[in-house]
Structure formats: structure tokens, C-alpha cells
Length: 83
Image (cartoon, rainbow, N blue to C red):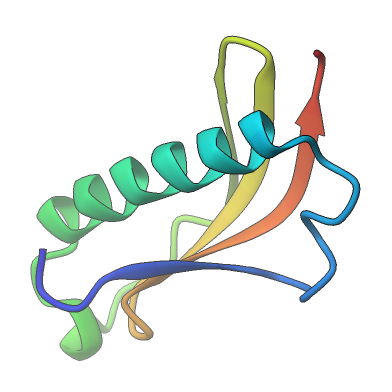
């Protein structure tokens, strides 16, 4: 996976979420980071356009994220928990 990682857009993005939601955010964001590392093999050397903001959901969790290809990271910008 190289050095791909995920991070919240704001430090307080996950505040107020139950622990189970935080765990699910981390799990799903890590899976997306692995997937993106396989799609954008060039990583920091990538020169094409970014894929933009996308939405992913699983179970009671839905979040929007941005793939920062050249930064080799997933930036989670919004989280919704329906639990």
C-alpha cells in the first residue's frame, strides 16, 4: 500500500460519534486507502486530474471523501452515522 493513509478534514470531524462508528470510519477509510493505492500506482508522481469527492457507505455508516492522489491520502470530509 506504500504510504497511503486517511485523515479527517477537520480535527473534530468524528467528535460526537459513538465508538463503534469511529471504528467503522477507520476500517472503511483504510480499505479505501488500500484500494486507491492500487488504482493510482504513481502516487506522488501522478499528474492527471483527481477523482473528486466521492461517497462510500456500509451498513449504518456513510461518508464523503476526497482522494488526494499526490498526497497519497484519503481525506474524509463528512460522516453520517444512522445508528
